Length: 83
Image (cartoon, rainbow, N blue to C red; front, top):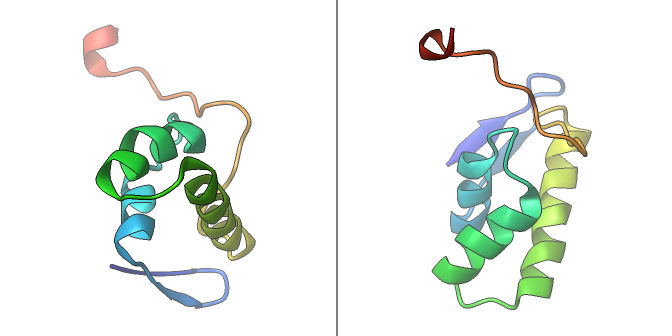
């Protein structure tokens, strides 16, 4: 998978782990849960190393304006069924 920054036109070619992080980054799931629930079961990797690598990847995307990190989940707008 490839993604591009709209801010500075930097291209990122994502490996399988980075693609998994990108696809799971829904604004509500913490990065720690993505590492624990998706990356570690899928790939034979130490959790601490996976966490460090995932944080570095996410920080790189944040620096290029592709992702935004937050301590709190993004509030989703109400769905039509919830009204």
